[in-house]
Length: 334
Image 1 (cartoon, helix red, strand yellow):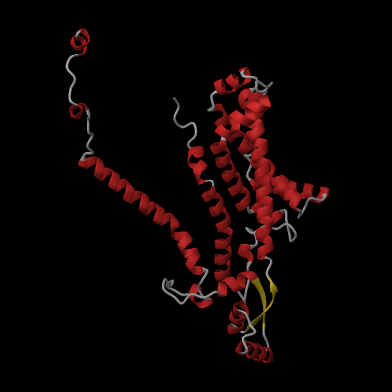
Image 2: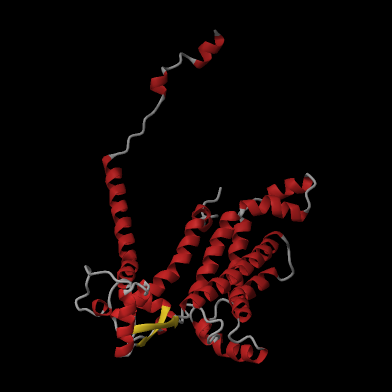
């Protein structure tokens, strides 16, 4: 009785539920934002679209003015990208045509024959892509591994001169690559690291390390220390606490750091051009230098650029679960 008097009669459930309706103005604003986002995305994707259609154009269609949007697709650019060719003499062309009539030529050889050429071997493009995968992959893994350890140490421990060390680490990233290219070139020649996979891996690791340390320190700063203190009280060692408590919570930050370091190492041009010649040369300086029949083979360059883009898209897509949270980690504080 007293409880009823204190609380009063209860209202019907339907009256206690409040339904928030979206106003027409808010809907219109959301629609406008969605349209703007779509338009910006389409504009940013125009270069990718141009690269895609150029990869399947003939030499005449590539240089046509005005540019052709509708055309007969061909694999000529793919053939130019993956093969080395030579002009076939008239007698040799007749011999190749006979082989084509007998069905003994593959599609690449047939396309080369249609332009009066014969395939003499494989191009170095595949080897350049393998070099890029090897150098970018190993250097990214080393940068992230060392960046995680250093970032955790800077975040959790009081080190003598910590601020000075952090500034020194960051300052290594302030210099443009072209400024240090010549001294590094001379040093690499002296110690035997020029045009070597090891030299490029070390170089990219060093340049990515400062970026990885600062990113990971910021991510670790956002993880409450109370979690680790509770684990230490429960008997975990510092290493077990780091492995079982901190690392699982920092996966999004590690994913974001991995993507950024990989993109730098994958796209880097100046060092790859100056520090390599043949053995360790990566794809970026190789793609623009494709010279064909008296000129630049734009279809082959577009095809090579498209193939160079695919691995990064695959990796970013695979890490998409962690990437969005990683790039916004710490933006909202409680």
